[in-house]
Length: 109
Image (cartoon, rainbow, N blue to C red):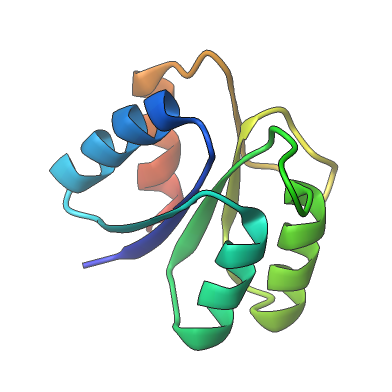
């Protein structure tokens, strides 16, 4: 079973994406703040991380830079906006659930 971190402070977004991911057989850990996602990556190995790009606490971009330093090969999916050239996987909000599922399946291969 693939293990994923879902990082967002948006309860509606978490509820929608969490259900899709669990139904597709992923083990999902949810966190509200990017700093907590960084801590989790330091403690355990995950297959990839999904980060809401809305700013809250440590910026999503900074958190991903730290995670990429710790685990260079970890795929990252931004939800909201594309946060730079090095992070090519992004799904815009409002989230098209079919596009999200396709993107997750490609990332998990």
